[in-house]
Image (tube, rainbow, N blue to C red; front, top):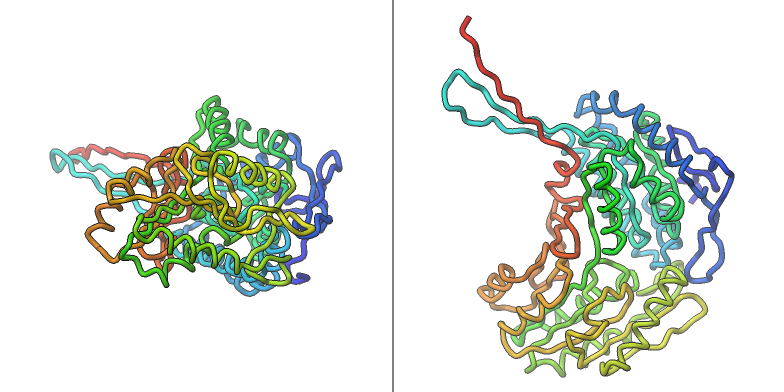
Length: 482
């Protein structure tokens, strides 16, 4: 870890590691042991004001920097990230509680995102518009907003830092990032590498703190020009309401209740391991986790039996053991998931495997409930844990109805060898993303992390994300005779 060390009990403002103004700190815990790893500065309103002020001062020069130079600097950052994959992976894995291999995967993804936007920085173009006569010229340009506030959760902090900070910087904005106080270490390590890459003071600032203190101070600050938030739907609504007071544009990446939809003609040897991984990766603590399993009735029993067997085989342990799954991230998350485990059987769901928390840390075993109906909490609400709700359907029409019977609209995964059926369902499902015969977007470069309904509105690091961090200006010129 020494290669990416940064000072404890400090945050990063105006190019320097500094203590909180009032000296307060927060403990960062290892979820597997519930013991403190280190401390970070506990930011308050004054610290947020310092960070926004630094970003505001740095913005004019950064926005005026040649976009190719901005891209080259972001690529130097990417190069430092890839050189420190193992150290960064250990930071993220221990902080979140995921296996080391999961931390490593997240750092590779984060590197790919930073590298992608390094290449995109000088390729942001406007359009030339048609005119009613040759005496006129019309065109558009994309300009940065200014100071971008980025607030991210604790589940994949390295990936979310990259997906929001890199495009904002590439477009010419400056950034104030507030990671979750539960898992802030990977974002701090990444910004230390950005400092070493040579970003000017104030271009990137990071403050850790509690949501009601640092988060509210940042998202209501009059010096912020754009807000990106990743987290719960309830908090997203509150941030959007607060942003309205300052008329600040917002992009929101919120919750999900993603279905894996399995038809009788699916290749189950491919589907079953992916379904298990989709709800156990990071202990199910992903907004796109495959938390609903919709199965055609004729193969229901076989699929449930095989999925349950796969879930029972998942090995859990601390991050350094590098097994299949780690604990939940915090006591609050453990209590939340435990509540679903109590409610599901009481509402009539049948426990197939798992169900009882185990271990000294915040461990919850991979759990499957069958005979779930759409009205149950476990089918409606985002659990954010390794808990799978199974429903059956008889035909494509029922499958479509079940897919859309949720307030969320993030990801739908379709398992079928009938390409016509897959294309019809991809059109009919109300979801920002669709995957066919795979979980999520493996193999696609620049895939947009789109969403609909209560899942929010964001492109989340995809090919069009750069434009989310710019405002379009239209220019109309009358060409005078000379």
